[in-house]
Image 1 (cartoon, rainbow, N blue to C red):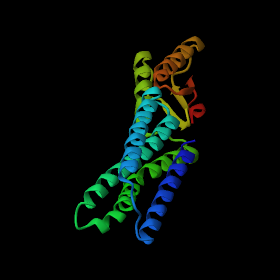
Image 2 (cartoon, rainbow, N blue to C red):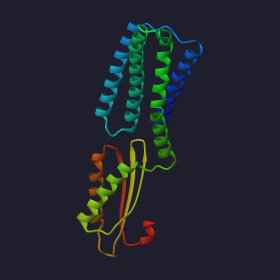
Image 3 (cartoon, one colour):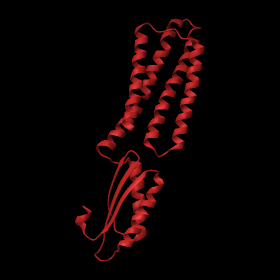
Image 4 (cartoon, one colour):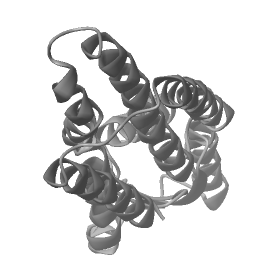
Length: 220
């Protein structure tokens, strides 16, 4: 679930931030420049690589996107460690060598603040699905485009449309109100198939209810 992924990432950042503050309170820390720089570089590259692979493997999945965000956030922290090690190496050659003890935790704090928006966005998106079920604006726009295309194809009036999204499932209800005795069940099935086929490229589990009715009350 996206909310859990967001909470996990938020917890990781809070722990990293707390650890950095403790290090500063204790007077900084000695840094093994070679070990830290290699670790940061390798884990950073791996993290970015995994995040990119995840996004390319399932571009329409919110859960995969959340997992990719976690990997990317971890890789950013690793890159910060690498930059911190380089900064320490430079500071050790200057009169500010005593400041070098604080370079790494300060950079970690900066990275945590920069990445703070990521878990907030994930949690907000997940809570929106849980409480409202409303699809994100981009997805809602694509749903409307599909329905408008079907409406124009079959010469139908503007429908009443409802849509919701929970995880990988998208629920779409479309009600067309037409004149009595103008549409058959077979024609209604054609409209339903057209809507489902139009929504299939979204890469989600589509649950579509399409009705062509002459009774406006049934569409409310």
